[in-house]
Image (cartoon, rainbow, N blue to C red; front, top):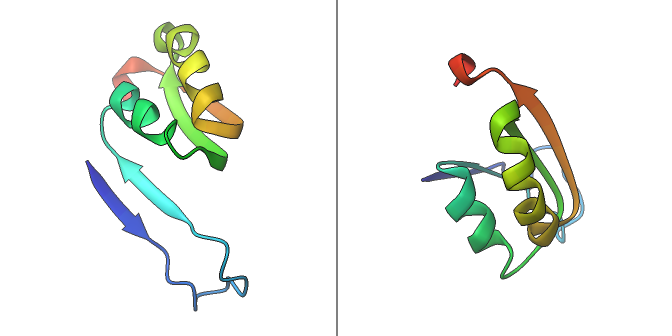
Length: 74
C-alpha cells in the first residue's frame, strides 16, 4: 500500500485536517481504518464488490462515499 499526504501548507489552514490518499487492496485497508475511523472516506469499487465493502466502509468512517467503477477500469 502506498500513502501520500497533501502538505498542510497547500490550501489547508486547519491543522486538525489531514488529507491522505492510500492505494492498495480495499478490504485490508478498510479494516485497518476502522481502528481509527476517518471523518470522510472516498473510495471506488466495482459493482460486484460494493455490497461486500459497504459494511467495512461504514465502520471505517463517519461518512463513506463510493464511486462505482467497471472491473476493467482498475
